[in-house]
Length: 213
Image 1 (cartoon, one colour):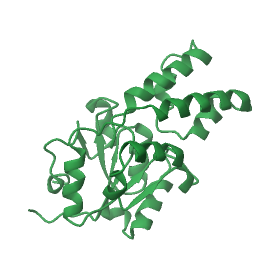
Image 2 (spheres, one colour):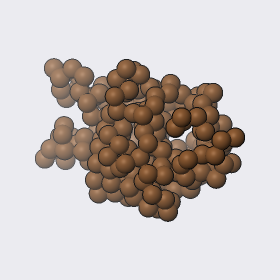
Image 3 (tube, helix red, strand yellow):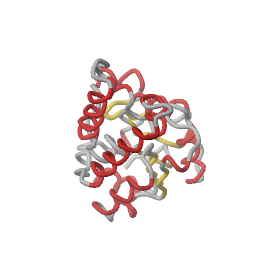
C-alpha cells in the first residue's frame, strides 16, 4: 500500500458519517413552512449551522418559539434513523489500521451525540476525538472547529483531510488549510466540486491512499 501522506481524517457527522441529511431536510422544511411559508428553500440555506445560529437567524428575541422548536427537534432526533453512509465503516477501519487519527467535527450538540451512541455504541471506538458545538466558539464556515480538532489530535492542519457535505462545512475545512473531500450526499457533485479537492458519492470502493493522488 502506498504510504498515506496525511495523519488525521476529520469527519462532519450528518451527511458524512450518517446519511441523516434527508431527514433533517424534512424536519427543518416543516418548521420553515410553519413559520416562513413564503421563504422557499430556507431549510437548505441554514444547513451546516449550529442550533444557536439557526435561532439567531430565524427566531431572534423569540425564546418561546425557540423552546417549541427545540422540543420538537429533540423528539425528532431521538427517533431518527442513524444509518451509515455506504462504505463508511470499512473506510474508517482501513484508515485506523494505517495509523491515521480520526475525529468527528460536528455542529450538533452533546445531546445529539448521546442519541448516536445509543444507536451505535461502536462509534466511540471509531474516533480518537469527538468535537461538538460545545467545543468551539465559532461555527462553520469559520475554521475554528477544524483547527481545534487538529490541535486535539496533535497534528498540523496541513496533515489533515476533512470530509464535509454542506457548503459551510466545506468552506470551514478549506479555511483551516486542510485537504477537502466533498461528499455528494446532500448536494450534487457539480455544486460541491468548486469547494472541494475531490468529490465522492460515498465511501464504497474509495481507498485512503488514492484520496490525494
